[in-house]
Amino acid sequence: HGRVEHQAWALTASWLLTGEDSTFGTVVPKRSIGSGAGGFGAWQLVARYSVLDLDNDAFPEFADPTESATRANTWGVGLNWYLNRNIRASLNFLQTDFEGGASGAVTGQKENVFLTRAQIWR
Image (cartoon, rainbow, N blue to C red; front, side, top):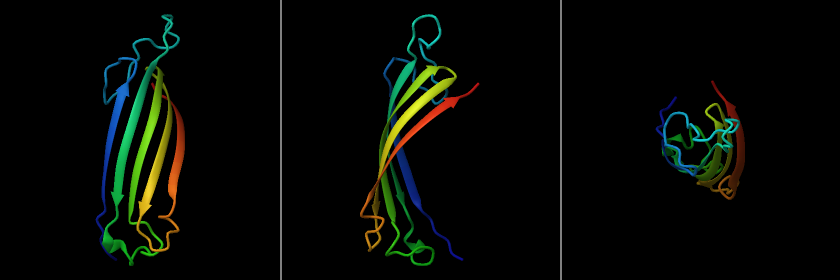
């Protein structure tokens, strides 16, 4: 048994290209698709940077310090399309750089991810 305390933080920024109000809630397009007003929905650019720093006490009791990353730094960009107040489509790219590990098996490579998501809510 043991206790470890990891540290993590993230910074996210977004900008609504089509002029809607920024909110922590649902983005409501000024001109929704299918509204009869010839709308094209709302478009939002997003960017994110995050860090995960693992507690040194995790090594070697819980993980092999020669094979495991001790830190992950991730940056990402994305585009959200709000067709109306109930439908959103997202496209995101994320890249993670790893630190730690003597062998380089994990830390010698970057992780690149493309994510897509469609979301419908009521």
